[in-house]
Image (cartoon, helix red, strand yellow):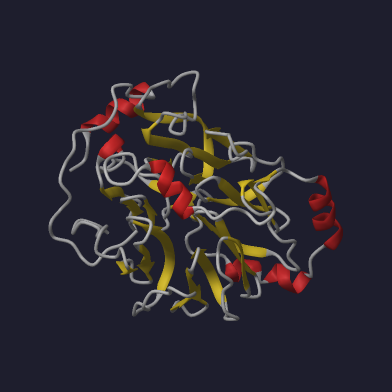
Amino acid sequence: MRWALLATALAAGCSGSGAPADAEPDADTRDGGVDASPQTDGGQDATSMDAASDASPTDGGRVDDDAATDAAIDARGFDASVDAGVDARAADSAVDTGSDGGPTPAPMVKIGREHSCGIDLSGHLQCWGAFSSGKTFEFDGVYTDIDVGDSHNCAVRDDGRLLCWGLNDDGQSDPTPSTCSCTPSCHCVSDGTYTRVATGADFTCAVSTAGSIECWGADDEGQSSPPAGVFTDIEAGSHHACAIRDDGNVRCWGYTDPAPVFSGRVASIAATGGGSCAVLADGSAECWGSAPSPPDYDFVYADAYNDQGCGIEAGGAISCWGADAPPLPAGLFRQIDHGYWFADEHGYCGITTSGDVECWGGSGSRLSPPSSFP
């Protein structure tokens, strides 16, 4: 099921007429799963969902780029032994580098409100779940990164160009507004090239090949006003984003608490709803905002939301924590993501070390991947 529509979209830069026809997900599914975002078709109202899912930042709200924070980071410096451990700690969800120096596919699954997308070992991209706003279908080509928002998604192709599709009421699916203007939904291809992408409730940010961050979409909380600098990775919650700087620390912006000033280099980050987490090169993890604090384990990745969190330990096993922690899945994992079907139905999905998708938690069976993935 590969859409001829995509070929048209890639050639024209945008299909202004909207989404592909709705289709039913494959009935042959495994136990499946879920990242936080507002619903636009049926069910609960998007505004009430945001209110339920986003805890207010403890500092009173919006975070702006702060020179004092930069000065504290720059003055601290890093220990060389910590720097040496960063590569060993980097999450497997990051873009791998091929023998020719270019990006190669890294299998991953990302979860949005009522829909999910994944990249398999061959770089094939597929989405499943709810079908409103054209946000779920299959794609031709090879992809190296994907993120899933409330009702829009963006993916990085192997040539670095960015494909965005879905709802575009705030311009969140339109990285090139001068050449691709379409509402209420569209499929747009960027002019520039990128390495990483992050989608929030109604905005998108991406790391360019030069390392700068570009954002578009809603900016009422400063979520589309990133700091200057050079960055290597980025994640987005509902109305905020956090990114790893080239010096190994983290900057956040939008409606969230400011990131802590860490004592070592950060190897991986996560942002969900109103919370964020970071794992340092030494395996220690810290969460802030609405995310509960993780246990003192040896992590490579941690993701938390309100009253629960899960992370990947150094050996690949999953650990979960919090008052409403889900039961642990069996097996070893290289990447996980958190999300929900409704505000009270949370769940996780991840890619195992063998490349399979496994899901657990309250929404696990809601967003099962079709039998054709991975």
